[in-house]
Image (cartoon, rainbow, N blue to C red; front, side):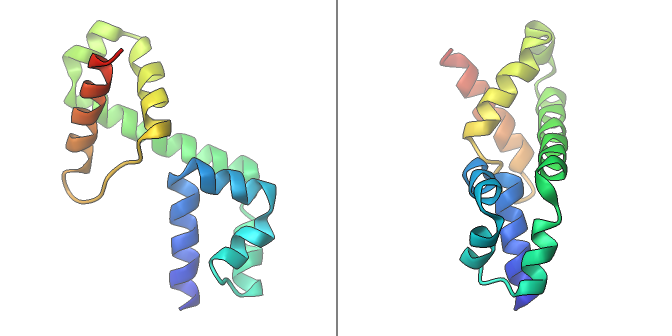
Length: 116
């Protein structure tokens, strides 16, 4: 069970801004929320804010790259604004699950752009 709890905690940290905020404010309390044992809590706390944000940024870049690959004309039309708009969108809309998650994400992003 400890590994599953640690994996759930990491998944929340990597995908949810509110979880990152809670973790950065109090890593020990965040660990307690997932019923982590002291060893797992220490492992989680050892990640640190800098490494956590660097990894999250890399996931966001991968997600933006997939959207640009699936929406090449939109990416071309927006130029550098594509990434800025995508990151704004991605902070509010978590990536879905399953094999079609990037396709569905690109569709949601395109709908988001229509609302601008």
